[in-house]
Amino acid sequence: MPRALEREEGSWAWAVLLASLLNQGLTLGFPTCAGIFFTELQHDFQASNSETSWFPSILTAVLHAGGPLCSILVGRFGCRSTVMLGGVLAGLGMVTSSFSRTLSQLYITAGLITGLGMCFSFQSSITVLGFYFTRRRVLANALASVGVSLGIMLWPLLSRYLLEDLGWRGSFLIFGGVLLHCCVCGAIMRPVATTVAPETREGPPPPLKTSAPGSLAACSRIIQRHLAFDILRHNPGYRVYTLGVMWMILGFPLPHVFLVPYAVRHGVDEHRAALLISIIGFSNVFLRPVAGLVAGQRKFASHRKYLFILAVLLNGLTNLVCAASADFRVLVAYCLAYSVSMSGIGALLFQVLMDIVPMDRFSSALGLFTILESVSILIAPPMAGFLVDATGSFSYVFYMSGFFLISAALFMGGSFCALQKKEKQGRPAEAEGAITEAAAEWCLTLEGTDGSDKRLCPKIMYVTSV
Image (cartoon, rainbow, N blue to C red; front, side, top):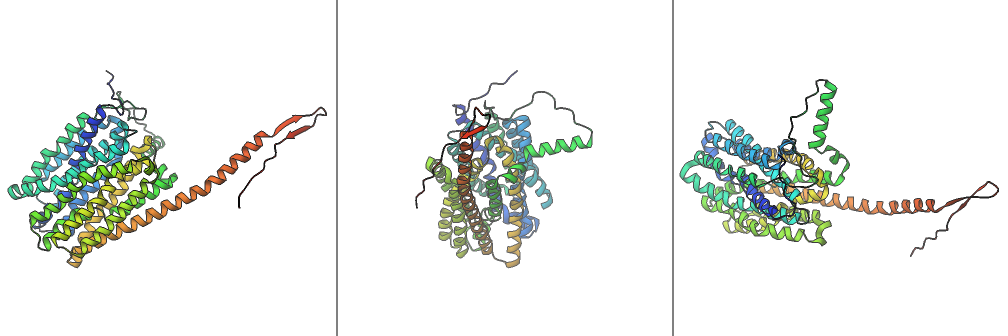
């Protein structure tokens, strides 16, 4: 039977927005609580800072790297089924991780399986928003990202409470049940009736070709469809943005992993240290909608990428403040300042991508964007952990974070300005070519009585000002 499709910008769109908000809180908000268990895991497995850092880095990297596979599932089964599948995988991974006896097992269960499930749930919920909202897309993305703020605020508090009573194994077991609620969020995301909505094929898949050239061609088509390498080659804005975000990510996630151990190392009580992450999340609950409303104004439509770059620059500068002092009052002020810039990054990260690429190619562009981004996510925490093991100080982590963020902002700002200048210089040449072509069309060929062709061309006078 044909399925009833929802209308875009309809009343059900707001239910989908709420489901996406909760889903992002469950998925993107979860990795921020890894710092709560950092010391406990390190002591239990007798591991170094670098070895322990692989757990949150694998989790977050797979959460982003599974984008192409998620894009294939969305195209085949739709966003609704993909979100629900992700909820099952995320819950299963956390339940099995509670029985891990080695860090390697934890990497596979809580890192690979849970990260892949979170990827399916998160990226599908982002994609479905683009189909449900057109005129209010900026506001919808900003409101949905509030879920990340709620997750950042609530996950550390829940983690601290469960860790005291149940230990990390019991906490991970409870987390498995909590993450199953992604399935409930996915059930709300009905298919939407748009011309660019992902199509679900009801019939069996076509038979695979056995010839080698045919198989290579099929693989090439799949890669072209779900990994936007053609956009990466021909769209300089997408290329600059992707490279800039990759460089930025080498520093952006580090405070979420190392802020709590940094505070505890300098004598801050564990409860107050966990509260620091919650302060960031609580502030973002109010700041992200404001950032979305500001960015959604028509006068800022062509400058959203520069607002994003400014947020990245401020984020890097605040990390330098954190490295200067570990006093609790200074750290609270740092968290508040960090929240302002983080809210801008969170509200604009995917909206800028939507502005750069066509919406009908957004799913594949997002897949390539996230898989390249995941490379940085994978190596950043272990690299910072190695730095801590080598120096014995967490302060260098925040200097490292500030360096990557500031340099990424300068790179993107300079590159986008150069591209804009080049585009403006190309417009007069295009206009002159159009005038020449129009003038040629105005030239009329008249056939005289003597058989000769006579061309009647209007005289064009250019008036310039000095």
